[in-house]
Figure 1 (tube, one colour):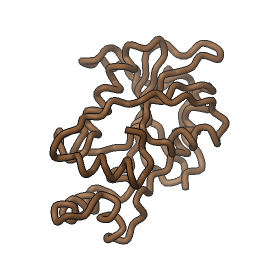
Figure 2 (cartoon, rainbow, N blue to C red; figure 1 turned 90 degrees about the vertical axis):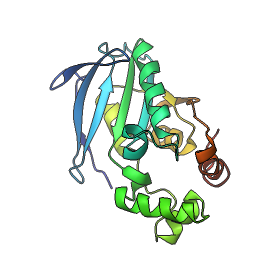
Figure 3 (tube, rainbow, N blue to C red; figure 1 turned 90 degrees about the horizontal axis):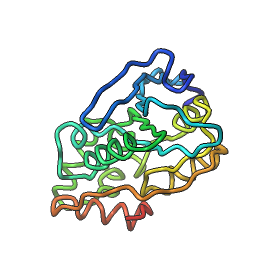
Figure 4 (cartoon, one colour; figure 1 turned 180 degrees about the horizontal axis):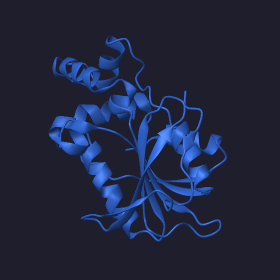
Length: 201
């Protein structure tokens, strides 16, 4: 369980400028004081005004989707669509959390993929490997937002658990639908997220 996060001052202190295909960002590392994992905060150069609602995406690492363009999930397209929307926002932020495979790690995620190839869905595969369907935690994201002085967000997500986590931390949260790429290869994956995990797709 995360107990805190080391980050302050709207990506100013300790941040680097990061020009990208989507626009200009500021980027810095967030260190989880509970387990030492390094996460990433990447945001628009301008910070939020007093009480301003910030467009936020909380995105969990997916090496296969984010980097290699896997069609087995919708993670890569969601991340890149979020970066494009955040870059165009007056104040926006992507929190990139290092919790691969819904928290089970890359090796176990690939084992889950192998089980899915044999007919299991994503939830059944995690359970067969001895894991809960989703081990991710979003408390570090809530703490990072608080440390950055953000109390109101427009959250790019289809996952009601993320909305609930921020609201329970006292952050005023409005859900904004995230774009999802549906392909033949990920239809079963998306169906399981909708039917078994309550995602709003």
